[in-house]
Length: 452
Ligand code: UDP
Image (cartoon, rainbow, N blue to C red; front, side, top):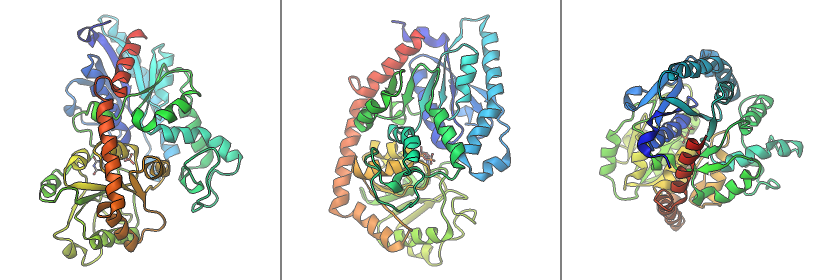
């Protein structure tokens, strides 16, 4: 087998999708493959470009994306991804072609293009340039399984859900109820087209998953039947190989000092990720629910995430005074360090896949408050399959929030969830060690790249 030291002339071109929850796993994958000896090139859109100074070992190639401001601010995911792929196709091909022209005179060769499935133009560009490619999926296998069932569920009249509060089970889609099916804010036909395109990885040699067998092996076996290329589950990538900071926003690290002053497992950490938002009424209910729970809380209010305000101007009067002792508010937290802190005992999350993996990997149970897309699916798995979370359903109400926080942080039910979450943490630690499934998957990936 080729020695690690001989691999530096093998270049891997990684093409992330330019949003926080997608950039992070791709950069982590880059760190992992760099530690295996490969040279890493990140081909990134100008939009949301990561800071190259944090990655001295990588080469960065910029792709002009010409993403129109009105498309971006529309929040219409299908339109944004369509525009990104249309605009990046040509420039990406040019980047690959320039690199190959330079390669002619050197030992360096592009061994493979690894792209996030939402950047499907990279697969076409690689194929055109006769380069091998692999797809990275940054969401869960459970989500993809549901996505693959959507055309059937649409035919059978279950999707899109006519009643978004219906708790009727969806046939053939355990553990989902009608209300748990994905919720899209984009035009349905365009969204279904996008999903079909990302599910069909045409010419790729493998599909890489940021997941672990202890969570999704059975689902992986089920979905694998629909594909002829291997599935490689090598996550959680942030545990396997954390890149230096991948944050687009600046992290407020002072909150770790605040956590140092709190008792073990006492703090509820609240964050809705990089995209979700709430209105003024929901913000006020959340504020009073947290305040009245009596538990210490660390609350991330991302600038712009409360509709109609810049940051926390819409906090209800009296809230700051009432929570001087118990609350800490930040714009953006060093989330992985927060979840690993001994003082954090629970996480109120929107159930983004990175947040889900980061929480489970630290043995932190969750209050699940999904907002859109496939977050309902993950909430359902968290609460009813892995049983490490409780779902906060319906309109946000301060009394219910207060109760949910107590159930998770103080009551027996929450303690049991914490024990199950800690058991997953242990299993994940085993899976990334020698002899574990993710460790073996990394070897499989390295061998596959070398064989291409
Ligand atoms: N995150 C962070 N600080 C925060 C909030 C979130 O670093 O204050 C990170 C979090 O660790 C995760 C990512 O942002 O890696 C959010 O990704 P996720 O898939 O959970 O949700 P998305 O933002 O894509 O909805």
